[in-house]
Image (tube, rainbow, N blue to C red; front, top):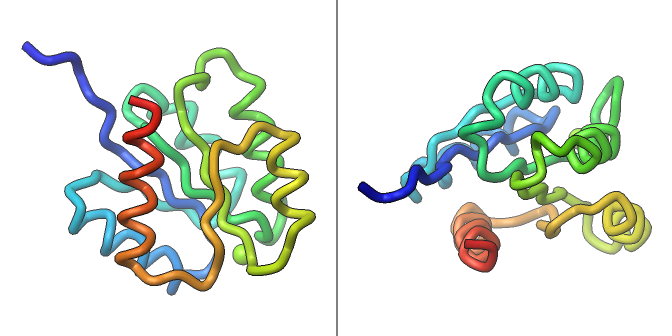
Length: 130
Ligand SMILES: [Mg+2]
């Protein structure tokens, strides 16, 4: 029997349009998805489901806690060490990339993006680490 493969992507973004587009295309790519609109709820989901989450797609600017706080918490917990974190960044926000790098982000996806681009990028990111 093949080793158990993690196939779930957690999408965290406070903009419903982004969540819907992202979820739709990831499902077309045969991924399972979980969605959340805020950092606090996202951390609860990660605690409960980390054994099946392969990757977190994480918005930075959200009401309440930012995406950075989720990134930091995930990267500082041994339990979550094999979860990849991909930040959604707004074009030309170089400081997002710099700060994300410092906190251990694995990759970036620049907004705005097309669903097809997103799916290809996610596959590429997961492929690299397998
Ligand atoms: Mg946002």
